[in-house]
Image (cartoon, rainbow, N blue to C red; front, side, top):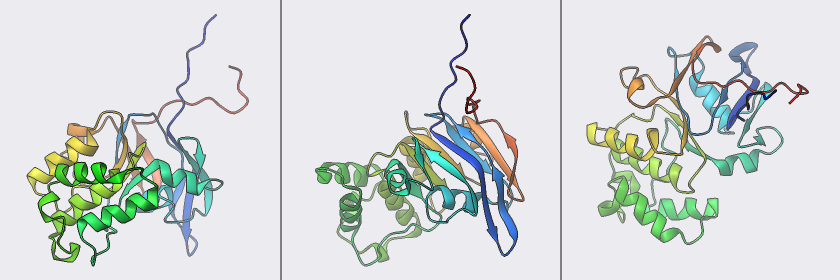
Length: 231
């Protein structure tokens, strides 16, 4: 008798919890996302979306629980996990005094990107910032900051993109660029918090909805084998 093969998730959270002052902002979140999936993380303001993404990005330490991304544990192997993810946070996380070229050069060294110059040019052209590559980032508009932040997040060809409100500051042309390079990019797994529920069907393969820090809807996760269960 053959048994169905259970797909290993590229991202799995295990009772992930964040508590501030005795209040659970994220409570016992357990999701398991397959490779290549594109998941919209939705919910009202204060539902816990940003905190969940911050934990998965290693920017915030969980109070309880764990997560694995590409097999790397958030608690045990955070450095290895960071190399597997691209992060597009609500704040662009760029160095304002540097030019776009210098920003991506700095992050290429940080990520250990081999021969980064062609990759940097490719991304700056793709996000429409190449012609302004020598200007200080501080003089660029919010939309250009978001474009450059996307290039930074994709620079090292991550296995998964964690994004918090990625459409912020982008005009319609910028949103099309975001879809092409990230939200609908073949092979890239995406977990993106968004308030643009009108756009979810255009790019997402599944939805995870949070309310008061808990998962109340999950159409994205896959079944995973229980530890110790027979093969």
